[in-house]
Image (tube, rainbow, N blue to C red; front, side):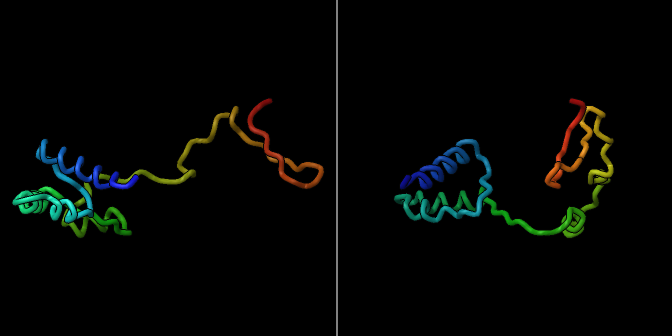
Length: 111
């Protein structure tokens, strides 16, 4: 609905100010600063400058990010992929056969 986003923004700002929290958003809330009467807009702009941070997504590995941040990774990564998983229980094994028309028929576990 019209105005719902503006209302959401106002709620976020109000709550963050009440608890002296941080806002993680790429929205700079300039519409709220410009719409605040008197010195309120200037105060809100100053508060947002100290209590709002933006974000961005980058494609890359965790190792690259740690290197760029000047940090070392104190952990090892677990192996990934189905080859590292234990085999399924016998009750979940699959059997593939061919139907009369040549299509595959998959049967799971004992019937």
